[in-house]
Structure formats: structure tokens, C-alpha cells
Image (cartoon, rainbow, N blue to C red):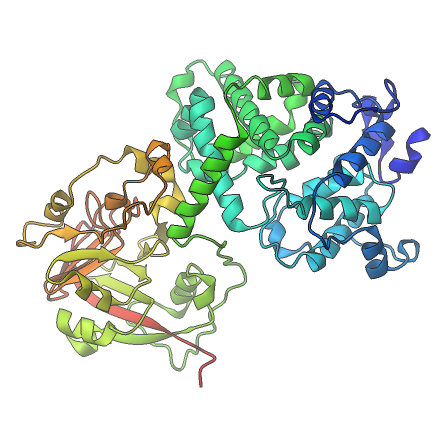
Length: 569
């Protein structure tokens, strides 16, 4: 077979029509515009060997870092590949975030080669922290590589691209998360009907859109993704956005055609919506050809790389300002409680371990340290502050006289309240969250993390109006947000779909001489009076939570726990 040079990893029985070589046998083109036209038209799509040669030519032309590992580096590291049989049991690096290697049309044993290549890449690119699309891209390139070393070099060049303004693959959580927000912005603008369908049916829109790259690099059938790859290697990252938008349009059409009343969908768990979209895309070959998908993707008008770049930078800046730059890994985080020393009148050891699994990873190795409890220190807000000041973060636990248990993880020292003087002003960060343990366990994170689309529906209110919602006994204390410097956020944010009203959605914690408050905006997640005896709970815009217990409650016991460094002597 003529393709043997570039098909040693391919199971030709799975390739279908792509196993037949026809059409041109060489590409004689130097002009980028002409190359772009040929890629979109599928000039080399019917000849496997030509496609492999074109990919090699395109990837070699990528401007890269001065020191970029090549095929020889791989051979030096791995030794003679013929004497070492790769194993797919070798786990993939953490930065792929659990994404498997799609087999596509590879031989079964070739998946192990992909594992080996990705692990070698991890050793050569220690700066990669989050790259869930890498397994799919590696698998695709392996179809067109003469050996593992060549595939390694091609992957390395894509990762090492340093052309200004050009990106090929997200390699950090910040870049990936901002790309998901950017996709939401683009979906709202360029396929409004499909976006409205997702908003209407999914409880968490951003969770659905977090799959957008996987739709293209992972879920699409091989016949479709190779045509995308043809264009992607010529035009870059924006192609992925275009194709994902086109897939969302086709999905909306599919749902409208299969439902008598397409406007009457009910909201459901986001995981179900994600699974439904994934199933549609995996089976798209029955209704949409690769050419039809590309035609739809490139029929979107006024869709520019400049707009994508501006949105991406704006979203990255927004996430950085909110402190969301790394993915919090909560798996394998176990709190090693000493049953002889841990004693809480509110939670059991198991319940405390459950709470610990939610906290940011950097605090996971700390031990809980009881700072304050009403059963020992009395029901006094002054003593609450005295015992809690100087500690951050802290964990607030409340048991009501009805037996309900709720609380909050609070990231900032309560002493910060003094910066507002006598005025009740909010402080804290986006890592704060509220929760309930009884009657059932549930956590409510900051609305920006959970589902930012809700924030756009919140009515703008004056801070004084919000203060009045805190209760009739708030006296003359007006609720104020710390002022942000002018120009703190890009003016482009004001036109974004995920435009967040910072007054309502960044109210994490507040306190003064007569109350403590957690969560604000159209209500409070928790409000406790100065005697730490009576409280209220309700929905608030910051956490978009339901009442955590009875809306008006009496405190039975209140505890505050600090985080003691287990490594400290």
C-alpha cells in the first residue's frame, strides 16, 4: 500500500473511503491565501499520503521557540522504539484533565503510542498546566506520522508556536477557561437561537460550553475532524470556534426538528444536556457531511480573529481580577482527622472531611483549628471578632434549633471589615462559598463560577437598596462595595453577554458591630445578629443559592474553624 510510510499506526479497515487514495499526488503552492483556499476545498483530502506530507510541511513552517524538542530528542529519551512496547496503562499527565486518547481509526496498540508521546511531551514542556485537547490532537497526528518520533515533533511544534497573535492550543487553565467564556460570548452573538436553547434547557450554561473544544477535538467522527484539521493547520485556533458554533447551530436544528414544541423545554441537569450534545456530535455523520459542516462554519459573517483575541484577553483579565487562574483539583484530597483531638458539636469527622474536599487545594493539607464556639465563648459578636481576627480563611458552621446545619467558607480575615469604618461594606474573594449539610448536603459557589449567564438577568440596584433588604433593623448603616479604580476592567466588558453587575454578584462577606452577613445582592445567604442568636437566610445574587435552612432561624451552636498548617512545628 502506498500509504504504508504514513500509515503504520492506522487500522485501514476503519478508514472507509479515506483508505482509497485518489486525486492530486502533490501540492505545488507557496502562497498562504491559495493554501487556505485549497485547505477549505479539500484539495488533499482524498490522498492519505499527500495529506500527511502537507501536514508535515505546514507544521514545519510554524514559527517556534528557539529550543523546541524534535524527533531526535524523542529517540534519545525513548531509545529504540522497536525494543520497547508502549503501554496504554501508563496514565496520562494531570494537565489533560482526564481527557482520554480517542482511537479514531488507529490500531488498538497505537493508542499506547499516543500515551507514550504525550508523557514525553509532558517532560519537555513543564510549563503546560492545562491542555485537555492534547490527547485528541496527538491521536489525529499519529494517523499521518511515519513513527512516534515524528508525531512527537509535530505536537511539540504546535505547542511551541510563538508567532505573535497566533495560538494553536490552550496550555493553561486561565486560557482554557477564558476560551469557554469567549465561546459563550460568540454563541450569544452568532447563533442566538441555539444559545437561547442552551440557556432554557441547562441549569449551568458555562458547564455546557466548557465542552466546546471537546466537541471538535474528541467527539467529531474521524471523517469530519480530519477536514477540520486540514483548515486548522493553515488558519489556526479561530477555526475551532467557527466549527463549534456551527455544531451548536446544527444541534439546535436537530432539537427543533425532533420536538413538537421547541419553545417549551424545561431546565434539566447540565450533565444531561452535555451528554445529549455529545451524542448528537458523535452521530453527526448520519445527517451532516464534513463539507456541509465546513460550509456552515465559514458562512458566519463578520467573525474575525481580532474579535476573538479581544474577547479572550478581556475574559482572561476578568478571571485574573477575580483570582480564578488555576483549576482547583479536589480529587484525592483527604483530611486526616485525628479522632482523639477533633471535636465539634455541629459536624462529625466524616462531614468535616466532606467540607474539606470542597476547599481550595492549597489549604487541603491544613488541619481544622477551633477558633470560636458559642458554647464556650458565649453569644457575643465582639468575642466572635476577637477570636477570629488574624485568621484567614475560616470556616463558619451553624446548627439551628431545628437541627439544620449550614455554613460558609470565607477567604478573608474578618479584620478587613474595619476598612469600611462604621459602614457595612463587603469584602472577600471569589473562592468563598456557602453550603448546607442537613437536611441534605449541597454547596453553592460564586455565581461567576457556577453559571455566569444568570448574572446578566439580575436587575441593577443601588447599594442602599440592597442594604435595606438586609433587614429592617439595619439602622442607618448603608451597604457599600469597595470602590474599584477607574479603568479596572476593559470597557468591552460592558457589551458582553456575561456582563456581571459587580455590586450584586461580588458581595461575599460583611460585618459590623451589630451583624455578620455572608452573600449579598437581592438578599443574603446568611445574616446573623449581634447576639449570635437569631438569623435569616435567603437567595442572594452572589451565590445564587436557595435558603440554606428555615428562612428565619434561631442559632443553637455557632462555630468558627481556622486552618492550621500541618507542616508547621
